[in-house]
Length: 611
Image (cartoon, rainbow, N blue to C red; front, side):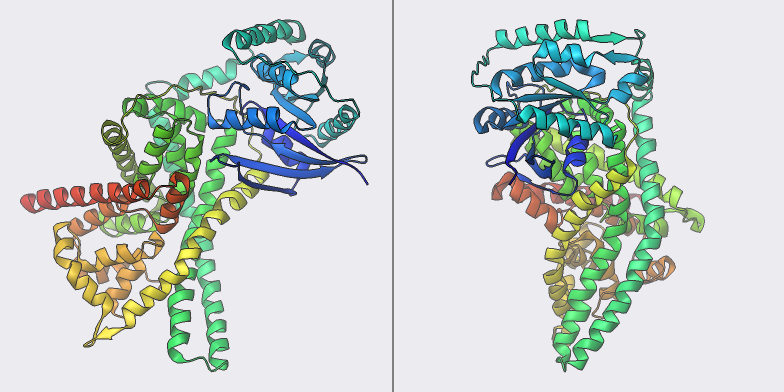
């Protein structure tokens, strides 16, 4: 029986390490958290003719002298767990920077295999690397790869088998002081000066020219807003058709399930609670939430693979630093557009605990795709004159609304950093990776499985019981008045101060499990149907809302409160998990809600004075 070896996969960020990992392990992998750390781990398995391998994908790190949780995890695993071998993946276009980690790893590991990846990109830039000479200089095996090329990956596994046949090194000598670190960097420069040759001196000219525009003071923010608008337009336009298909499919499934329950002589009250409460709420959330997420997350990941997202962080680093935060919060904020829960999880990339909390507590100020349908419907019904309802115009106004949300993010971050989360913003290394052609198929698969289905699954856990509660409140009566109406009437005086009404406010409260069901609850309450309905046209909705007292003031107040109110239950649960604190979780609920209440009151007061 072949022996199973544990092999660590190490490397700097953005060197194609994940691509190597996926190419070796395929679907034979799982993810989780490192013990005691909020850092993702990935473990995969593969086999060759002679050996079985357990491959541990370490977090991206520049050094084994840690300055962040990710680097601490990588250092601890390499030094303390003593894997049978370590594969250090390097970027052929920036070999000198990568060799620092290689030299440190060689000193503390039993066996090391250096994988010089992205040779195709290096070749395009006229960069040549003498791999044989590099192997001699380092004293370890070196193999070149183009991660997308199966033949080069096969060569990597064959070389790994040969490395495991060698006896392990037993002498370890690793000094962690700054002098030793500086010595390692000089050593790296000496090696690169002999093994790397450049066809021209301007091998990065293309990337530099693009960066001169994308990161410029004049064009940076207009380009970001235009790209944001384009992403929203694609998401809005593309989500309509699959959403209608899902509604139709769930409608047929509902009929089948209803027939089945009736054939089993299920009591009517239980039948209605299951069908019109639980099932209809779940089906509505899936139909509305899944299509835009399945479009937005792959687009987001494509921008990440392309190399654009680090530029966004670079552009927003100064504004966030002025608020006492760091530029990495820009990336987590962008993830929040797809789902605030995913944005909160993404805050793990921020090293400073204080700045990580700032990002977590303010992520809900940018609307997730669960709030997009509500915002778009209101814009189309009340704010676009002449009945124009084109998706592109909606996307432009939506971008303006979201820009306001970003401004509020800065204000809330500044407020927190001056009060409960005082501190000096930290410095961090932000690498601007080369622009690369995205791997579209892998991006789609990774986005759907790692983000879309993960977030959707969390939403459905709370959607089912919420559907039952909504059904009970809209059907249980006291003196011929439903509990839903009682609650709406009770909240109405306060809601009027916000420019809303009691029905709207109770809809937001009952929409806590998922923002997608706020509008359906409002329709259900106004019509008195007792069940969630779908398929209403915008003209029907506008007439219904107008008949119940809606004006432009109501619509704008609704937009403000949609933008600023408590996070959904999925996000709240994620915040609780990430912070392990009831205090910070409660603050994450109160902060955006307070902003929403105050802003709505101010707008309502000014509007009443003017009109």
